[in-house]
Length: 112
Image 1: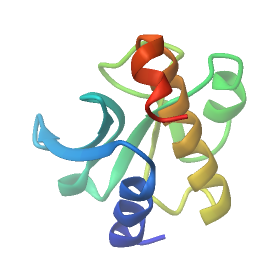
Image 2 (image 1 turned 30 degrees about the vertical axis):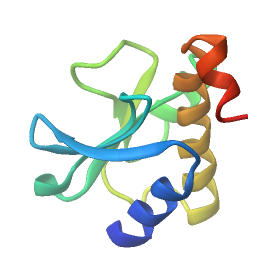
Image 3 (image 1 turned 180 degrees about the vertical axis):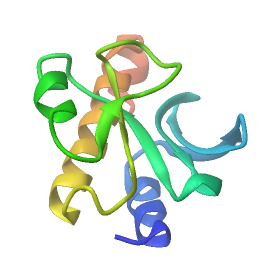
C-alpha cells in the first residue's frame, strides 16, 4: 500500500483526524493518536496493539517494539509493505478501537 492509499484509509475511519506531532504524521480519534508515521524516515509507522498480540507481532520481520511509546502496547513497522493490505487495514482498525476503548463511554458512543 502506498502512503496516499494508507492516508485515505485512515481518514475513512469514523472520527479520524490527521495532524503533525514531533515531525510525524499522526492519525487520531478525539486527539488521541492511533497511528504515527515517520514520513521522512521511509514511512515507518507505529500503531497500538493488543498486548496479547505483541510477542507474535514482534517476532515477525520488519516489526519491533515502538520507540518512546508504551512498552508492549505499541509496535513499529519498517514500512507500509511489511503487512498485506488486508492485515494492515485490520491492524489499523484494531489500533483505533483500542484507543477509542480508553475514552469515556459518552465519547465512544459517538463512533459506534
